[in-house]
Image 1 (cartoon, one colour):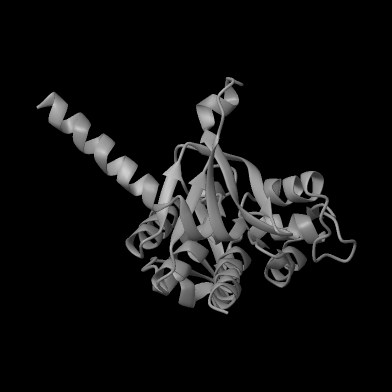
Image 2 (cartoon, rainbow, N blue to C red):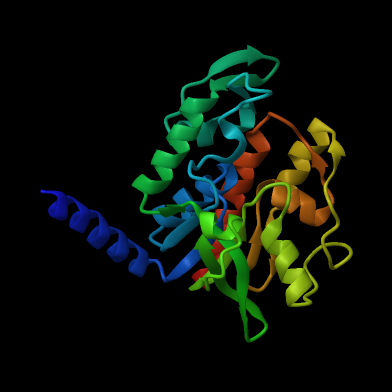
Length: 256
């Protein structure tokens, strides 16, 4: 019995991993914008792999605001919540609240049910850069990365690489630093996140969601960091709309 159980895990994992070695979209970070983008891209029939550094996907959703596990949405985000069957409560003045654990669980289920593959405890440590475009990601196990073990990584090729790493914008930072590229921002480089201004940050999160360079895309707070937008705190409407917007852009590009 022990051998059969272990064999089932190993066989299935490697079949899944092998199927993700070349994908239409590689998403770095399983936060809200990344999960929504993954669901929409996969639902359209494209192949999607998400690489999440932490053991648990969901990004900054789980803790709500300062571990009060309720999060806030604007009315404009409700159609996306409905798509994921998220339950919410009216809080007045055009705002709605939802249980953070419920929302995170719904997004993870929605993305995987649509066909997206999530590889947790995997760190993206570099990009693949070929023929003047971002063409994939370089991955390793998170424990290997954290322990600084001398273990070579592996490569996943992709038509589109989405930086959904949140505030650090790690993939964009790597691309501009190592490949020396100029990205689609007013300065051609990463402009850095500004301090909190919720109203402005919510709008700019969606506005800054875009293709930054051939093969390289940004959503959520990574987009705000790249383009110099304000931080917005525990309100998630802009983050959700950012994920939906970038999915449309990526699908248009990979189907062109």
